[in-house]
Structures are given as C-alpha cells and as structure tokens.
Image 1 (tube, helix red, strand yellow):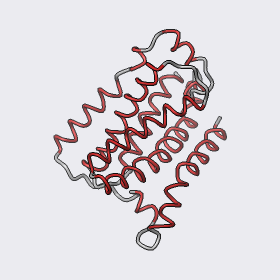
Image 2: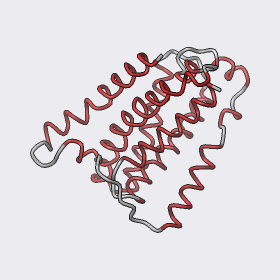
Image 3: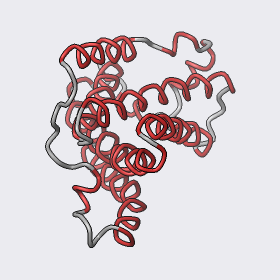
Length: 208
C-alpha cells in the first residue's frame, strides 16, 4: 500500500509538473527560479484577521457539506464499489491507511495538483486576465479535470452527478485560489496544506 502510494505520488508529480516546467524552461528560466515562479516561497498574510476568519468559516461549511446526499442511492452504491475511486482503496483499513493516505493526499493531490492549477495556471491567468477572473477560470479548469477523470475512467455516472462534481470541486478550487492570491502573497503553501488536509480527512472517514 505504501509503495503504491509513493508510486502514485511520483507519477502525479511528474505529470502535473511537466507542462509548467516546459513553460518555465522556454520562457522564464533566465528570469526566475522554477520553484519561486510556481509560488514555493514563505507565505505572508496580507489581509485582515477577520477576513481570514471569514474564509475559515466558509471553508469549514464548504468541506463539512456532503454533496453526496444529493446523489441517488444507486449512484452511491456504484461509486462505493468502483475501484476507480481512489478513496475506496483505503476503505476499512483503519490505522494502516494513515501513512499511505498522507503520502497520496498531500503529495499526489496536494503538491502535484497545486503545482499545475494554483502554481502555474492560476498565476498565469491572473497575470493575463486579472486576479479575480484568473482565479475563477482556474477553478473551472480544475473542476473540468475531475469531470474528465470520471469520463476517462469509464465511470457510468449521470449528468447530474457531473454537475455536482463540477460545482463542488470548482468551489474548492475557487477558495484555494482566493486563499493564495488574495489573502496571502501568492505562495502556494497555504493551498497545498489545505488541499492535502481536506483530502486526508475525507480518506480517513472512509478508512475508519
């Protein structure tokens, strides 16, 4: 299980970093370091404390809301028995799932996905379109990626489920982009930690 999680993390890091790295190599390598360009630098809070508190409350209610309650029972049964749903690999494992889930959720999901979406796409789109449009567009692309993954995996889910998935993942990406670009100084460490923690908690609920 641990080796599988490590291999998944490595593959995701390579896949999600490939386009950003090539873009940086061609256009920016003489101007700045790759990791700095992506947002790997110390986060600096640049808003007011009550704005962060409001964000925390919104994110808490967002993550505590189970959108699966809006899905019919047949679809739920199908998803719970489908091996393509990554969290199902940890179902019922209990404490044995903690370490592999940490690796997969924080590196394969947290670091890898944040590199591509909040580190690369969000920053490029914000620079081109403005901060708010850039954050919104990267959120839409992040949501579409999750829809596409379900389609590529051949999962037979309804249009309603795809709409719910788009709204839920898109809202999460919107909050993560807002956190980095509006509340902090563009560092992607806040979104990495929040993204990884959210996925890890969800996985632990399945594991236990």
